Image (spheres, rainbow, N blue to C red):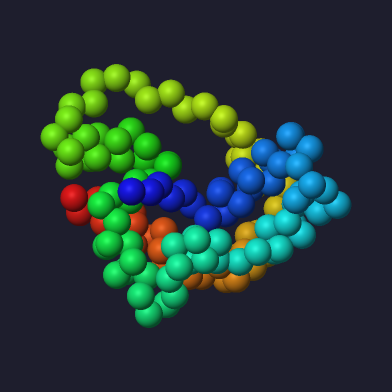
Length: 132
């Protein structure tokens, strides 16, 4: 089981979290430099490529989507035969949307191009979540 989120939102959140906590892995980077510093993070972590990402995602019992957290948790509950009658707290929020406004449309487009496989992975996970 795993959860994914929009790849750019994920990267922005990591940056904002790292800056806030003073982590070395963001020191010296501008926001634009940081989002360019690594590509296709999901593909690397999930150990997949263009030819097998669908098969890899299908091998997971469940793949949720952070932006659809409530409906993801409800679908997971149905899969395991449990009702989810409570609020799931969202802790460790970075409000990374504020970082998005600091990027130009070109920087956003360049990120999406460089991370095309992560966007394919994310889109396929969204499609699977909506089908179940």
